Image 1: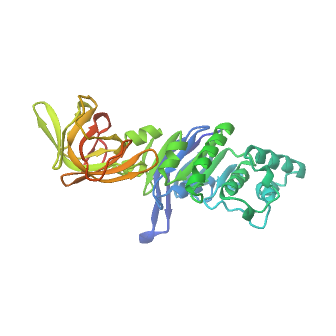
Image 2: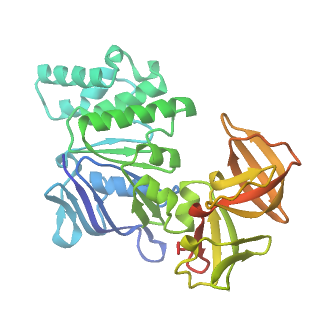
Image 3: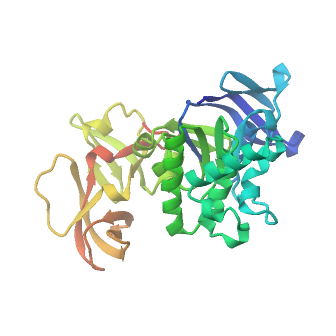
Length: 370
């Protein structure tokens, strides 16, 4: 197992006024044996980062390390080609050769190395057994399901026993049902082999279910690195909060009264808990609360230190979403998204509460979490 380290890596495409900065001084360490998920919107540098690690792109500046080896550094004149980096890559479209059977697709990187036929046979059958596709070795890719094709692509990446596994949106071509199974499978294989893995995705479900840690990219700049729970519960800024999951956002100001702090957002007004009010110097703020941290009740709830009463609202939308309900509540002119385990009817009058411990306050000017 090896670590991967990107030190102030910059990648610029083009020159002059038409140049595009795909990566901007990226500082990222993927620990040995870690499953790192890099997420962000399309066109914000995720795939470029993978390609720089793989050696398919040369960085404009900075250093890339795989284990103890410096594999790219423009300033030091170092660039190790892809074939000598010993990394395996699974592409978004899986890139299987349609004219080759599964066995030959998997064996391809070994044949390039001119390995003995008996060794190739052993390695291919061994990895096919591990990935549960041994019965498909004599078929062509077109004869396989999407999930099987994905496993063939992973097998081809792993058969050469790479130091690092790189995966570019590996679930994007799978339907929603298969995607859940595929995630579980990939996580199981990664744990079993203990291989250092970097997966890029724009899907929060991929990141939250697979990652040991998550790195969020925006316009080539890392916004936050942390455990899935940290990135979800304590997003560094509004961009991360919105990207990693749904969140209600309300603009307003902090008003001090009698040693206590209140949020005044016009239609949304509430007393802030000490944990949220502490160290807030900005007056213009944005209050954030995730839909699952909003509680609705047809009757006033008894005293609860973790629930803050917001006001009375009216249910405008209530959709069943398999074991839960997606609800939209109007409180005066404000709309509040709620995920509830309780069913509500359209037009129901409800009391609205926020979980105090889950309130997030962002500086309105910087949009950073306070």
